[in-house]
Image 1: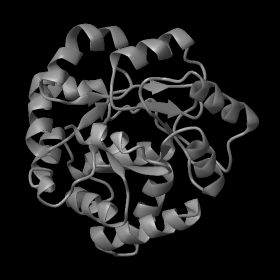
Image 2: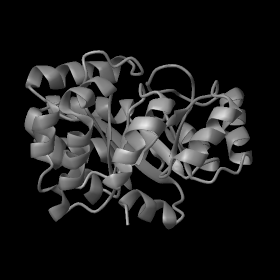
Image 3: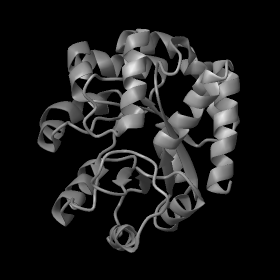
Image 4: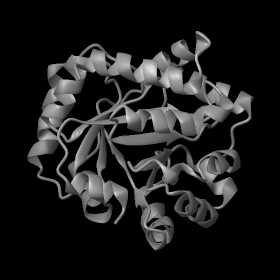
Length: 265
């Protein structure tokens, strides 16, 4: 069974998913970050594939992607770093990034490499849904890889239903239509959006991302979904810890402990 299905099949409550960018702060730290996050009780990890034009990302993740590319990170390098990850990591791993690097790698080759190293799914925000249905879904299904799609407060109910009917794994519920970045709280409009989607009784689970950085935002996300995804706040904490001269394991341990304290965990 795909690890994403296994996780959500257990009906998780207050799930914590962490995003970080492969190759940042250090080129060779990717696998150590993943292992340390799992040891600290993280339920799922999204590994960012750095790209030179990350249009959906705010300045923190843009800076991480720029650093990773300067460090020499590439898809080929990432897959080589992940080749032994399943010897000691059991939680779901999702690759998140943009279509261009995946297209350059070759989509089926990408899926083959994901399967070989134990990646469970992918999030590609700039992939048109029709192309997914007609071209990419059959290939991903062949390798038991989940495509995860984003919805925002501006996404129509028709499209949400379409995503729910034609994908599996979970729906990535973006808290706002803006780019990624930490927020202090989610206002009434955002919480009403969360409730609206909850009341649609979708077939597949939902997880909230973008803006989660503290107890208020995490609690609001968990009140209307299976949990929250933290990206920018963790990337900031990881970069700060790394700048203190800590190893990737030590920096990750310090960053995730601080983040869990911030979230009230």
